[in-house]
Length: 276
Image 1 (cartoon, helix red, strand yellow):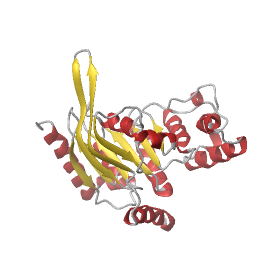
Image 2: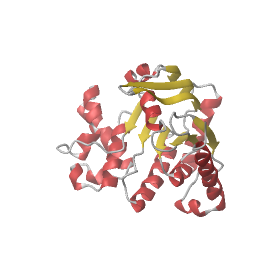
Image 3: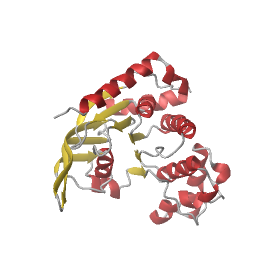
């Protein structure tokens, strides 16, 4: 436990020593051109994310949460403002492989084993077979799936498949993990367990995580900072720095401190619907 706390402290210390922000958005906006006319997805987004932070983006459907992740990942290009990822333009960060992306669905190759799904990006990047195997073992062990390396995705539960996709995103060891509502389709029991495992994973690795969710409880449990967004066009209504302890057993969700943060998030979302 002391080692985990040390890793978190190290991440905070890096910011204090002057490392570039993991993500820095200034006046960020994106307007899509459609046959029915322009649609503004994001407007005037200012956000700085420190290295090692766990940031949850929460807001109603269509508020631009996933769009923000896609801009960071260079899957979309902004039409206003600036965006830097570890001091680089998003395209440069993508080419430098600074981030891994976990989608809503695991998107695993059904004909490949769990191990070979994890090593797929490493194969594309030209890693040696020995290094691919070593990294697969390391990251599958971290998500507690090393015993299933020779299985195929269709032999796993939905929660296990999503853990494979997390291991795959981490296999080339990026600094930043982008997670687009990865547990939204899972049952509540499985979701609770994966929330606990993801929190432990973040503490062990010190990665910067940007996590999109519609769940207030999930955002409050996981995040060190909660970004509350308005309905479209997506704007940031409030950034809440979590006062909760770093050590977060699931039972924390029943405490007055947890419920107070959840209430603040809920009030922010409610206010957002009257935002003009």
